[in-house]
Image (cartoon, rainbow, N blue to C red; front, side):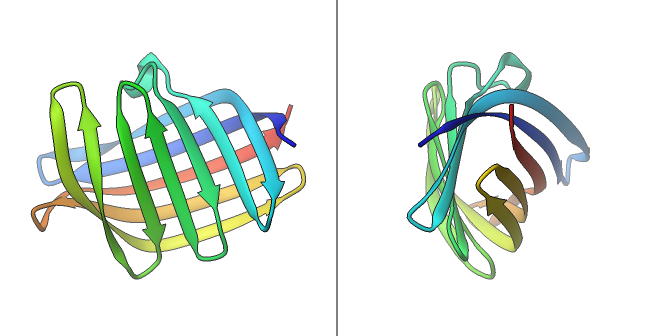
Length: 140
């Protein structure tokens, strides 16, 4: 059964062209814990540049799956120590990219929890950005 939650996201990214940047977002969403894994979802906003996109996380024991559907479409698999390829579809076209997860920390229970992931995104084995996000999910 899904619960209404508040989702707080703090994200950091940097690449070779910029010093990096931080984005912070607090939004409402849905959360559920069943069959041994947590799921939560929210709608992206104009602030993230992906307005009209629904983002859903599935948090398993050693793997996190992030699915985006809408104006941006992608399915990213985060698994510590492993690189996964994914398709990134935007209104201008589709790209194949890679995500190399350096660390995952997740702690979820009946009322929400926390997720922290550090990862690198590449295209054609060239680093596009180094990223980290921290997410807190809590009941309304």
